[in-house]
Length: 255
Image (cartoon, rainbow, N blue to C red; front, side, top):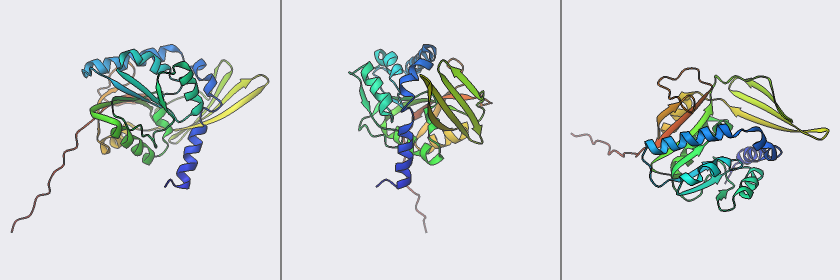
């Protein structure tokens, strides 16, 4: 049975993008999607994955899926926002979508690759939620399957106000959290939506991955630049592999 606190948190997360969903594609350029597609294809090639079954976790409006679908044997999407999924389904009715999130992920399938892009990981605002999400990801990966994702770090810097057409972002970074008020101009009125992200360090993320059978194999500071040493990168792109758990038999004491 789900606790009352969990249900409340789940409802709050579902309300995210309720008002913003119809405007989401307007403010995100094709460049970011195209760069992500190139990176994912490169990782697929480097790891010699021939038949790719891919799950896009927190897939939004399905734009990335549309650009990736020709590189995959099968591709599916998951998102907690019904409003975002409606746009994704209208875009391509042949794709299978699930109205789920990180914490209740259960497609009853396994995938060679799971991706989660556009700092969706940062919407997991506690270490417990982060660990649970990674546990669910590992459960849905095949042996040696890959989890490709990005996240915002403690070194994230933003202007207090950013304008993109009729949309205004008010940003506040306080301690470990990034609070965003999105104002959307509609006629003479403004619609408001509130978002909250937690900023993570690499060690926090890698530790949570490791505890759930996922090992970081590649780190990128940008779409084209691998990291040899973690510094003050505002965003990191990680590739984690599902590793086989080796069970050991405890040694018995003699005598």
